[in-house]
Amino acid sequence: MAGRGGVEMYNKKLTWDGLVPPECTPEPSILRLNPDRQWEVAREPLHLGIDINRTPGIGPGIPFAKELLAKAGPNAGAVGLVPCARGGTLIGQWLKNPSNPSATFYQNFIERIRTSDKDGGVVRALFWFQGESDAAMNDTAMRYKDNLMKFFTDIRNDIKPRFLPIVVVKIALYDFFMKHDTHNLPAVRAAQDAVAKELPDVVTIDALELPINFTTNEGLNLDHGHFNTSTEITLGKWLANTYLSHFGHLL
Image (cartoon, rainbow, N blue to C red; front, top):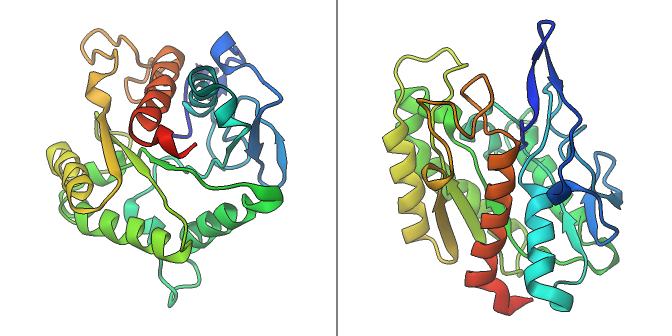
């Protein structure tokens, strides 16, 4: 979700190539909530300063916003993106846990949502694309459904009374960069489907339907583990069209 498009290994260091395609160029009507929780014009990499200790590149956020504005027209107004993704994390790290002061991901997430309300902003949707690290280990994969249900339910309870549509991207691979006992991609994918069936206003799209090929490396970076720029743009447009088809009437 943070985006690794254009990020490759150069001189033994992960580096973003700095290439910004037309689908990702800045526009005054597309904003991001920056690490200091201030609105600014969104620029790539969208998750710079958010996905700390990582090398972010092109992700789906700005292509989503551009497609939404192009399809929805004046009804969309300005689009404020609130990037929160942290690469390589487990769903357990995102859970609300008042008894554990070190569980900061959830609190930071909620605080960024609340801050985005400034100046009349309204939270319109949550896009969730995570689970590859959970799929790398059988125990976390088997607990994924319960954890995801808790995460979504807690978010909705904490930002009441607002309506929060959720679009989940079903993962296409497990995180083979992690130490793992065995991978269980099917369990996480099934959990994501189950949550969408059991919770209202949760929609899934399937990353396996993106233009990727794990044999030829089509649509992937050279590491075979992250989407390239073209795939991230396709995903962003797909998120916009999914949102509009299910929830566009709310704009």
